[in-house]
Length: 111
Image (cartoon, rainbow, N blue to C red; front, side, top):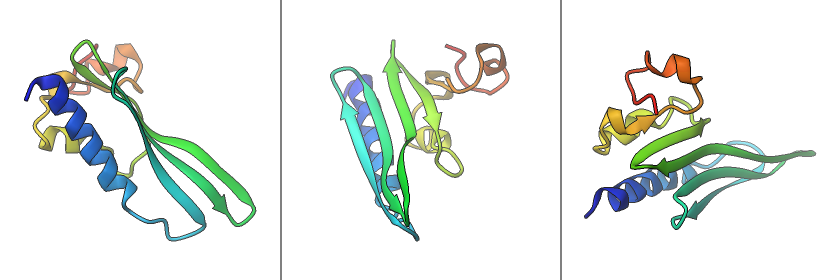
């Protein structure tokens, strides 16, 4: 399996694992949205908590130029270590939610 497909499969598997965890409250559904042609991966929450509408992006990942760019990571504990455990090298993961000048200190790719 080539690297791009391996990254796609690892991201999808990790997002599916998170989406399978039910919420303790409200009528909240987790949805995975994947645009494999453009290498976008989203984990969304939608639904209702009593009278409050819930709709938001929990995780947004892109694959850009052979690297995994984590644009948003709202998962408790983060998914970065899960990607590393799945075999993705740290130098292929960009923590895009950090400013560019901070990324050099994260232990991951800067861009």
